[in-house]
Length: 88
Image 1: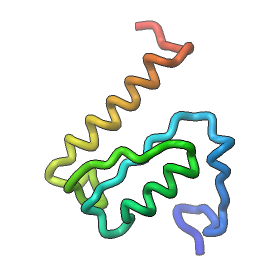
Image 2: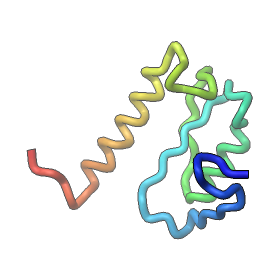
Image 3: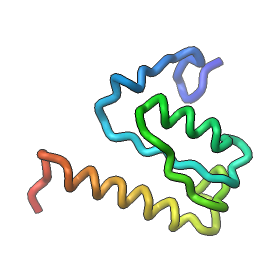
């Protein structure tokens, strides 16, 4: 079975991942449990950012701004740490 054009048996070696990885989780998510998200994050050498009370589709949650802020903060942190900063 393929999802989004990728074979279902695709394996990713998180230890080889060089890009920063953000894993968002919610204690209210019934599709991807917190335990599942912790395992995914661990495979990339990180821990999930747990957002309390948001649904699985965080961008559709009435409190979507919470997850958007976490993503924006993550991206800004990467930008500040990057040696390849774009000149403004």
